[in-house]
Length: 194
Image (cartoon, rainbow, N blue to C red):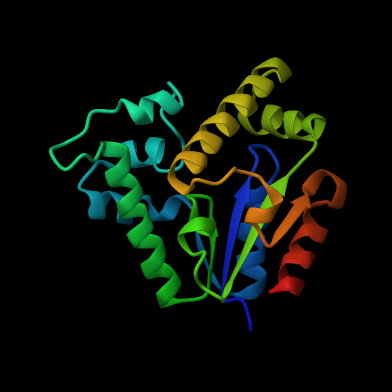
């Protein structure tokens, strides 16, 4: 079966967002990343700024912040409401058109579909540090901290909402090391597996 939907989960600094955007362009299909924040905000009734900070990353306090987050009378926290709104938007997008979806637990949200290719992009630390230093104009030491913090928050969010381990190969159809393969080859492999 042809894979209509490509989800890309990634380590911070691996170039996964760039690879996903290029794959979408080359295939002539929709690309969803930060451009779905307004839809999630509308669905949840929360501000786009809050969604941008919370939809993919755990609270900075870590896993316990989820467990002890303020909950309404139904038992849901703000993070739960964001996740449910995000889930609804992703399911609607997948039903609507072929697309590439970056992050946001889309691989798990769409796990029951046969037309999804789930990809995890990772990279070697030296290349990720150089990329983040260059893109964010920070020192190598600051880049290391940004990478560790962002990946920890992505992992915590993913693990909490999916019950799976973020980055574990068996959760994805394809795992690619962008440092070893390069972006062009990663893009070609993804398109070939589609």
